[in-house]
Image (cartoon, rainbow, N blue to C red; front, side):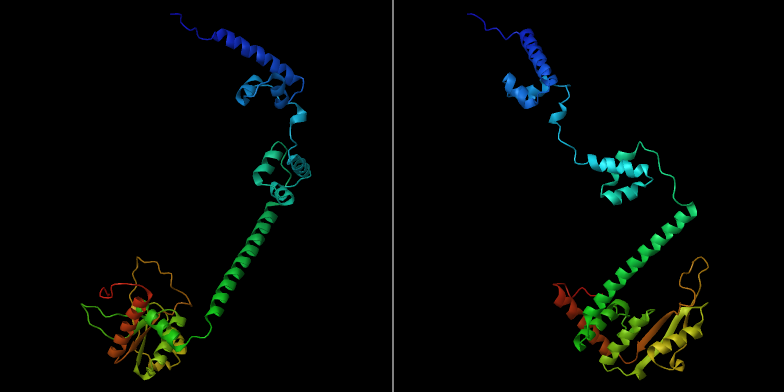
Length: 295
């Protein structure tokens, strides 16, 4: 039985080198890959690329680079003393492109002193912060305008939620069904008092007391909260003074520190129960929860 012989690898290598020589010659004559393919009848792109490997394409086959004009403009501006940021803004290019195009050119001389540069930077930062503050204020004002006038129901729900977040609450281990509210924000106190007015709680049932750090100006704080509530300062009970811990660095100091106002509603057990029931009604209406799990 006659054995089949494999193709001669040396012959195949010689054929490739011969074909490569022809392809290179055509390439150097200025032919494109398509022309070489048609001339040599080679329709395998991988083989065609291997045959002309290392031979540059003729200039006429190269597509014009859309960024060539921008590159020349960037270099010209750099030679005129423009900074990279100025060039980027002028030409609308990316920062990386500008850096690549002008990296071999000398840096321009500073147009201003370090002091002037700092002044410009500070002015720019101030302008930016002003714009940011205006944007914040506009967002807050738009949100405030969207609220409009509160109905009695809306005020009642807002007051219940506010109390449950900030007010004293009854505990299974400590029965204290009474409304007692403490806060340092005058607006929060004002809203809480409006809520009590809605519930027809007379001011005569309120006990008012300032809770403040012992080193603060108690008299000035009491006058401030008296103006917020709209009562005479003589109506206040004795202030609760907080002892100072020498290891603690206090930040609530200065003229704006006025402590907290404690509002205690006497004879308010029934009112507290109504408030707690309303709160869990809000929770139940908002989502399916276990109302037995109450804190």
